[in-house]
Image 1 (cartoon, rainbow, N blue to C red):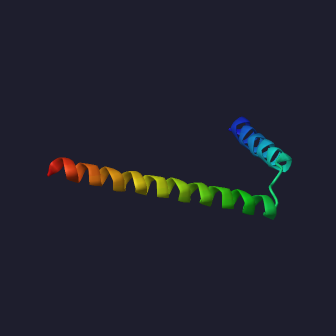
Image 2: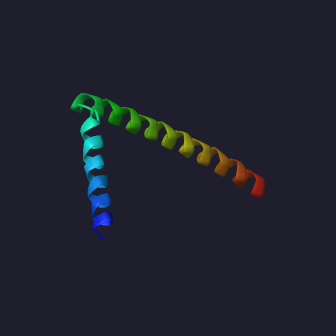
Image 3: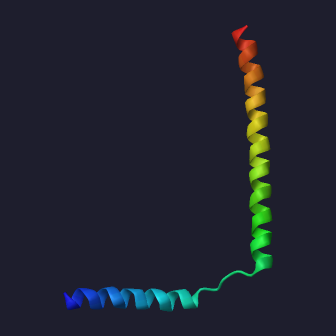
Length: 64
């Protein structure tokens, strides 16, 4: 049982050491990335909406 506890404690100690090595982004980097993601989502949404609109018109004409 003691060996299992030692392994668990060792694991969490390694996790803490690895988290200390992480380079966290600053506020400016996070805001820039957020703007890029939101812009990309809007472009994809507009593209998907246009494709849906065109296909619905084409399908409506084919059904008539």
